[in-house]
Amino acid sequence: MKIVYAASEIVPFASTGGLAEVGAALPRALSDRGIEFIRVMPLYRQVAEGGFELKDTGMRLDIPVGFRRHKAEIWLTREPGPLTYFIRKDEFFDRSQLYSLPERDYDDNLERFVFFQKAVVALIDALELKPDIVHCSDWQTGLIPLFLKHGIHGMGRTQTEKTVFTIHNLAYQGIFPGSQYSVTNLPFFCFTVDVLEFYGNINCMKAGITTSNIITTVSKTYAQEIRTEEFGCGLQGVLASVGDRLVGIINGADYSSWDPSKDPFLARPYRVDDLAGKKECKKDLIRIMDLDITEQTPVIGMVSRLVNQKGLDILAEAMPTLMSMGMAMVVLGVGQEQFHALCREWVSRWPGQFAVSLDYNIGLAHKIDAGSDICLVPSRFEPCGLNQLYGLRYGAVPVVHATGGLEDTILDLNDDGSQGTGIKFKTYTSDALVAAVRRALDLYRQDSVWTAIVKRSMQQDFSWERSADDYLTFYHRISS
Image 1 (cartoon, helix red, strand yellow):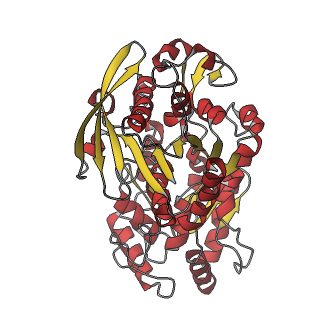
Image 2 (cartoon, one colour):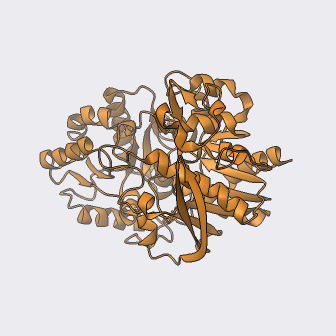
Image 3 (cartoon, helix red, strand yellow):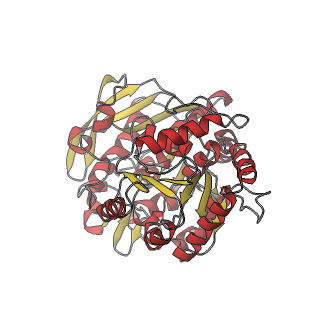
C-alpha cells in the first residue's frame, strides 16, 4: 500500500505542535508493515536553515492560484524517515513563522496553502505516484480531496485515490472570505453548504470533512466532543452528519525521542527501577531556571503554547493561591503577547519561585519533564495532548483538565494513591484547578506513595504501535 502524507508541518523539519509529531511517528510505526509513505510539506525558512540534507530535484511545477500562476520548486530528502518532498516558493514560505505574525495570521494564508495543496496534487501526477491513499491533516490540506477530484485548474481529473482527513484541532478551521473563492479555481458548485461554504465564507476544514472517505481525530473523547455545540466550533452539525466516517484514534508518544533512560538532553538518565537520575535532573532544572528552592520543594512544569485554549485564564486566577502552597513552577512556551506579559509579571511577583522561558526549546522541554514532579495541562479543550504522555514517561505526574485526549489517557488517582496515573479535574474553573494541585501535593508529601505513583505512571504504554494499528485498519477499509 502506498500513502502520500501531506501536512503543513512535520518533525524534525518544522513544528508548532502535535500535528508535526504525527507526520514523523506514524510512518515510522508503519514502515515494517508493508506501507510505503511519501511525505509532502512546504519548504519553510526553518527547513532551509535547519541543516538538513536537501536536494533540488530540478522539477518545476506550474501552479495556478486564481488568475496568477506560480512555479513550485520540488526539493527532497531521504533522511530522517521516509522520502519527503518539499514544495518551495520563497515568496510564500520564506518567513519567520509558519502561519502568523505575533498577533494575527498572515493575510495571504489562503493563497499560500492553496498553492501548497495544488502542488501536492501536481506532484502526485507528475511523478505518477498512483497512491492508494492521500492522508491530509488540518485546514492547510483540507482542499486536497477537491483538487484530487476536480484538478488544480478545476476542469476535472480522473481520481483513483482514497482520502483520509485528520482533525488535530477543530478550533483552527482556515476560514476566508467567500470573495476570495476564485483563488481556488474550483467549480462554483463546490461553494455550497454541503461542501465548503460556511456563512458566506470558505471553510477549508469543512471541505476536508465533507469530501474525505474517512475523518479521524486524535482521541475518542474528542471525536464525541466535537459533535456538540460546546466543542464543535460551529461544525457540530456537519460532524454529527458524517456518522461512522468520523473516528477517534489517540496519538501515540514517540518513545524513540522521549525516553529518560537514553535522553541526551538530561543531566543524568534514569529508569523506572532506578530513579536516582531524576533527582539529578531536578537539581539541574532548579539551577538552569534559577529557582530559589530546596530539592524537596515540589516543582510543577508546564510546556505549552501560550494561547487561550491552554487554560491560562484559570491558571491566572489560581496563581496567587498556588504560589502560597509551598511549590515552584516552570513554564516553557510561546504564543500570544498577552500571556507573555502575564508570565513576565509572575516572574517579577514570585522571583525564584516562578520561572519562564518564552520560546520553544526542545532540549529544555525534555529537561522540564525530567526535572518536574508534576506536569500541568489545564487546557480548556485538548484534542489529544502529548505533554501529559511525556510527563507520564518521565515521572512527572500529570494534573489535567478532564477533556479530549487528557480524559482518555490519564487514570484519576484514588484517595490513597494506590490506583491511577494522575489527577483530573472535571470542572473548568480555577477552584477546581487549585483543588487538583492540592491533591497532588498532599500525595507528593507521602514519599513512598508518590514514588509508587511515579513508577506506575512511567510504565504506561502510549507508543505509536497501538495507534498505528488503528490507522492501518481504516487504511485497509477504504482502499479495499
